[in-house]
Figure 1 (cartoon, rainbow, N blue to C red):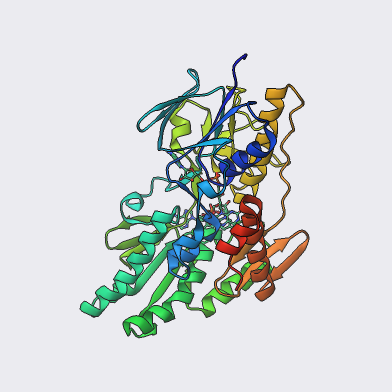
Figure 2: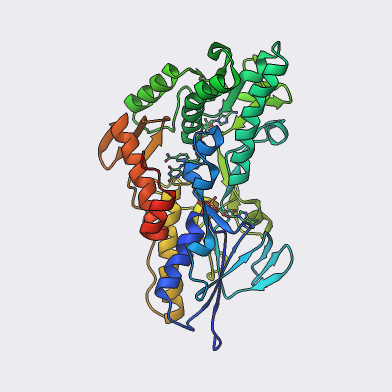
Length: 398
Ligand code: FAD
Ligand code: NAD
């Protein structure tokens, strides 16, 4: 390769933005042309999205202009939607143009996994992006307004969340905090509002999360008014609510699906070998088919020591971004690449205001101290991508 190599990064989520930021630090002038493609001109802090979705925070707080994160002299930003990846031709088809690359980093994130459950795609909402959470927040407020016009429609005040994994739990915690405010604003009797969290498994949160913390989370949320239905799968979603596996119907105009994520369909369509849209990458985070194509974040699969995939998280995506940037520079300079090894810093899940549960290192934490830890983790990420100015601008301190 005698000319300057072209690196294209698809997606400015956790994996993509960290790759771009690290590359702009590591690469010397004229060592590579780096292009970052994203469908919006902002990066969003997905780990905050449960808050604006419930209306306990402003969506603006969860969005950061990409121009504030990258040095536009070192990284070209292209605001465009990726339609297709053609790895054999080393080309990317965008909505209105085509890009060529020598090295590709795919960080297009995940999509809701609906497991083919009828009606979910048509009638349920998902916590996935700034636009989706704005829609959910407006929709919830509108249900309160509609109820005031049609007070016989108590189902307008019933909210169903499908899935009690981390996303479902964090969202119901925020929603339970928001309800008293909405009841006051719309002059609604709080006892009429129902928040159901329906979960197929016998309990909340992923298998392996400490049972005492799971119990703590369930109790804290139940005390806030959340009604859990465990060992109860959602079988169908309709315009009027959900049908459960036991035949029960919950009437509701608001179904939020948090039942899981899969990789972006664009990877399957590109012909990569995928499992639920996710590509199993090698130790250097490259696809098995093309050693110039790296995959990070929710559309990649990295196996743990027991041969099981790590859960897709922002934590792993950012660590992958670091390693991919290193390996791209190594490939250009003909130096040694780094193997990816996930370093689990722990997990903390918010349960609403001043409440959280988590495991950090070997310590289990809960309550106010856990909620402080959650804020510290969030601030750390802001610091990594944007330094002190971003921490001050977007950080949540209280
Ligand atoms: P994403 O961050 O999803 O970014 C993908 C990017 O690609 C986006 O900018 C998107 O706009 C862009 N894009 C997608 N398709 C296209 C296209 N066709 N063309 C152009 N651009 C495109 N993980 C944790 O570790 N800790 C947490 O506390 C945590 N909390 C969470 C809370 C919530 C409510 C949710 C939903 C998830 C949470 N996660 C958490 C999981 C975490 O957010 C994801 O694992 C992480 O965002 C994955 O990063 P990514 O880089 O793969 O993709
Ligand atoms: P998930 O896959 O972890 O959980 C989905 C839940 O939905 C599971 O408990 C599953 O049993 C349930 N479910 C599936 N089908 C169902 C059905 N038909 N009816 C009822 N319940 C059903 O998905 P998630 O919670 O969106 O998390 C996605 C990823 O993001 C995970 O890797 C998670 O660790 C990460 N995340 C982390 C945090 C955090 O660290 N604080 C917060 C949110 C998400």
